[in-house]
Image 1: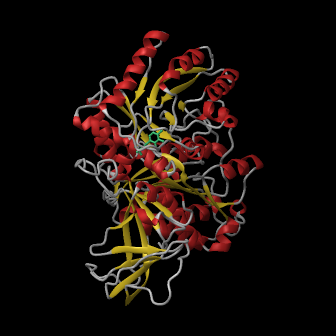
Image 2: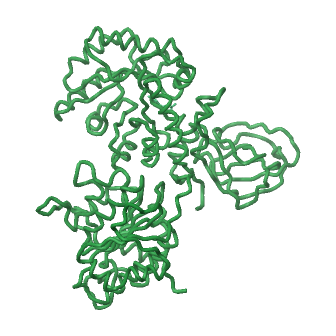
Image 3: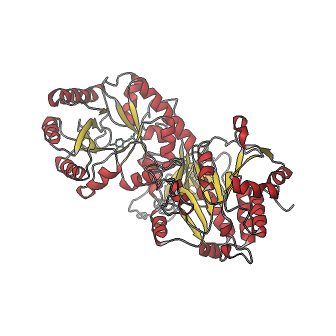
Length: 608
Ligand SMILES: *Cc1c(COP(=O)(O)O)cnc(C)c1O
């Protein structure tokens, strides 16, 4: 990996979410996890949901679309009122939105009515922070006028503090919010689901035991993503972990230089007149990150004995004189980030975002379960696949032995056609919380056709896997399109091409493989399939490969390229399971033999 990157530790995020959600639950407060700090990254959202938040909250449509595209079906709250022109998108994509202007509420209602829906809103009350919110005197009239609208329902009221005016949440101002809620319920005769008492900063009252009764919802971002470094500045909440998101950059120069610049001083590149105290000659390092990537003032180096001296657009200058251990060219340096720095790094296209798990993933045992449909079973038996895997020192487990399947087991599924991929994926999804998919096939399989029994046809298995054929796919949200790679594509109908263009699936066509070479393509494919997942499933169809004299593979990758792809998969150690399709008694004998030798390569067979 080269260049600046943000490493996002999903394990820490999950644990922080669990701490916050559990503590809030004791006080009758339900938590919505705020993902805007990580641009709605689906892996982060899923980690928060695993930790126990009941919904997600986001400020931007692009991010909400990213969450929904990943099959996340949890309630989503829009944290910011939309412009009038996007009212329809609000009704379509979120479950509840924060509102403070009647004109926009009216428009949302009009559109929701036209769509035959009722959209939930949370009315925001300004308790003194002076950002968004209805002024308390205007609250009841606004409620009354909103009640006349048929397309919206007032699901709750909320407030935002500590943002614009830096006003702290207190028992007094949040008590006022609860009093407003009671008044609305009494005078308007409605009952409110939510009384939302703010963001991470309100957690301090919860810990102090002074959060007013009646507050039943909080929208928490910083405390989960950063462990509350900004929220609990004076008195850390010990149970939360810092550094779930860390920025890392490369050291590109280390030299001893004077601490004061030499010559007549003017303005720096950003119009400031910097001042540098004279500390004599010091060892300085330059890291390859700057103001174009991140809010530099929000960076704190984690490396002992180092500090940031300043930065220009692409260079960060550090004092590393007292670094322990010493810093050299080629080393990587890491930084803790303020919320502002995190936002800027996450939105910079120059900074790579790498979601990862801090927990050691149980190493795959050399143990494999073989599952085959009727047609493929005969082929596997004839080719002695079980014995060949045993010869590679795999322990081969019968499919019926499910009760004693240990963690780390791999699975090989074989079928007469591509539909085997669906049952194979479903089994793996059931055993993991997030996985990637590398599909090596000539076809996209993104049509939308069903057989007489209502099941996806062979040319529609990826549509089914990605949840396009049902309201919610059986494989989501564990399988996000952001972790899906199609490799070796040679055929896609115009409809399939259109779907691929707007999906978040990565495609390497035969032309891409020719241009980039298999090694680079596979490296990228494996990176995408493992981003924030516990591993990946491989789906292989013989038609992907050109085998001389066999028409179906014509124009596909070569035998050698296919082996190379499989060898790199084995080397990555990220494969959890694999399916291979098209195995029937009528398949050309040589094609069958090649196909099974590709499978052996994926399971780690080497020449020496
Ligand atoms: C960003 C935001 C939050 C979350 O704030 P944190 O300090 O990250 O917990 C909550 N509510 C609204 C309206 C926001 O915009």
